[in-house]
Image: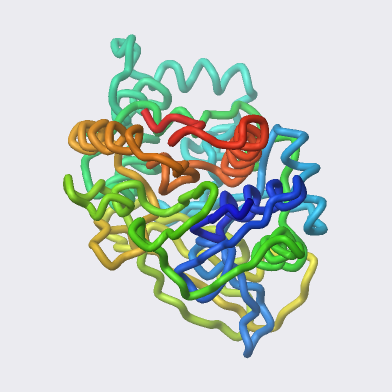
Length: 377
């Protein structure tokens, strides 16, 4: 039995590997000239820096099984993501922590004092925050909201924080200690030789055949036992109902003969700075030593037809359109939609792998799989 996997990112690679190890033959078709999707990494020829070609990806998870799984295919080095932000002529730590609060307000508050102080700044009249703006005002009050969240959010999403759901900000807690690790998960790290090498190792199995630079449309699928599709959900149906909305990123790449900013990620929270952040890629591999540096300025904008989709918008219009596409997909036979694009959700890498493992398990249990193992709605 030969199975077709369309897309050689994390979803496709994990599913392919699981099925191959269970005795199936798997054909993987990838539209790009490389595997690993948007977490593709490659060495810069001039500096030797490992570059995250489509923007930085940091692996973090509380899922011990997923952590063990990726260690089968790559050696991970410890890595903590410590994000800085430039605002009002100063550099601060994010997420907002005790150091951020004391520096911003010129205080020397202890944790309990800072908690009471921030609660006094917060808009306590907001009892059930519905929007990003309401959530921020309820969390931290107007001063920290204006300095760190409003401008960055306008640039990232192309709309007012008053029009975005509160859930987006729930991923950014306020900490009343000096912990500046951006993530709070138990397991955090980077594959020593990059994500592309890890995905190549996943696909390195005698029962897996990989075809690069080979896009596949539904009418060209051919005679396979089942198809797992990791491309855009609306793309499978030729965008017949319209295009689901995404934000995309433009990268302005530049190099520097030294250390440009002293950290991997520097956000720019003010709206009059056109880019959202600068990433310095050699700092994502702190176990390496490079004289030169490769950096990206990131600009967010609406995704057009030929762009790479990054962040699903999932506003009212998109959710209504998504429901219509899900209804179409549920009538499809012999195909399962997987991953960030196939289910139109923002997924961290560990969740992507977890869902791919779940999807493969469903298929192996019954010899087939429904259109969605993890529902988009």
